[in-house]
Amino acid sequence: MSSEYAILQLGDEKVELPIQIGTEGNRVIDIAKLYGETGYITLDDAFANTGATTSAITYIDGEKGILRYRGYPIEEIAERCEITETAYLLIYGELPTAEQLETFRTNIRAHKLLHEGMKTIFAGFPPDAHPMAILSSVVGALAIYCPDSLEPSDPQQCELAIFRMLGKMSTIAAFSFKQSIGRPFIYPQNNLTYCQNFLRMMFAVPSEEYEMDPDFVSALNLLLVLHADHGQNCSTSTVRMVGSSTVNLFSSVSAGICALWGAFHGGANEACINMLEGIHADNDNLGKHIDRAKDPNDNYRLMGFGHRVYKNYDPRATIIKETCHKLLEKNNLKNPIFEIALELEEVALSDSYFIERKLYPNVDFYSGIIYNLMGIPKQMFTVIFALGRLPGWIAHWREMHLAPGGMRIHRPRQLYTGSTERKFVPLIKR
Ligand code: ACO
Image (cartoon, rainbow, N blue to C red; front, side, top):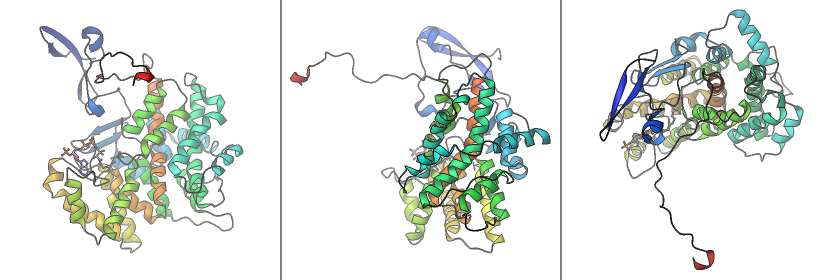
């Protein structure tokens, strides 16, 4: 804690508010005691300027376009780390030794299978159920099937819940896809890596050998790693918020999945491909769509564009865009949707509307192009985002529970703007 203070003048009264300084030099005004000392709360619509917690997991400098996991630049992690190694780093704070990593992977593999009874849950969903709805429901149901790992204050139960969550979610994700296309579930195989296993569970059929394209395995790994954590975003804040009531990890993650689904958050990848395909179907009429996005009377937005924190190019979008180029070149492919995305970016980034508002492509702008190339259907895009974000959700849930001084329930306040006290009118007189 620094010895600096900010002075808040409230009428004749001066209030000293402590300033806390982060390891990267960021300064924040600590208002935790403001209400108790003055009766004032602060108002910050949509938490645009509110730090809800301290955290040592991910550093983001939105002005400079910097993202680091536990201090390591995202570019380096993306190039050199496999998703389970990234998960270990995020959850436990350090890169694992070879032995630690092998034990971690073994523990995850040991929990990939689902209770056979859970298959009846999938069977009850209608064929057109969105896989995100299936994912959140079945992850929530893990709390029923894993009653011995629900207690957040028991470190052993927590570890077991973490391995179960990491092991089972990719199986649930793949089963949700198989359910939606009416194909048999493919069980995980423990001799495969995390990404190989997922692709096999998604695309193999029992009647044929499944051959995997190593480029797709690497691309999937890259996308999972790039999505693995991003500070106090909407879904991670949801996981923390729900978890702060001391509910178990499965229920907290299930809530995070629901928060991720919306088009302003993880659902933007599906919405973005729909938008790009819509522009293509509309004779590639970019101008019309840019004009709509700029029109204050039209709700239309460029999906995959803009970010609450990044006021510069999202470093994850840079890496994904490069990977799109590489994959397309290697396979000698031309992809009209990618061409439209590139052109749309160029037009938008030279338009004063987007320049003034500092709106750049975000992680969701190009990711759908890669999923498309891999043969992953649109409805699964956000499911894969959820798989990628899972280590981050777990890391934040765990960090919150291990916080020195203990965890408090998250409970924002409000400025009440409704009716003042009024007299009740009986039904007969209304
Ligand atoms: N297209 C057109 N205009 C936009 C866009 C966009 N994609 N994003 C923001 N704006 C405009 C707003 O209309 C607003 O304009 P105004 O000042 O004239 O009213 C201004 O930019 C600021 O926008 P806000 O909505 O206040 O920005 P906020 O930080 O609340 O929202 C968000 C961020 C939700 C990401 C927004 O940029 C958006 O809707 N983008 C499209 C959806 C998307 O790609 N979401 C994924 C984000 S990344 C992730 O969650 C994984």
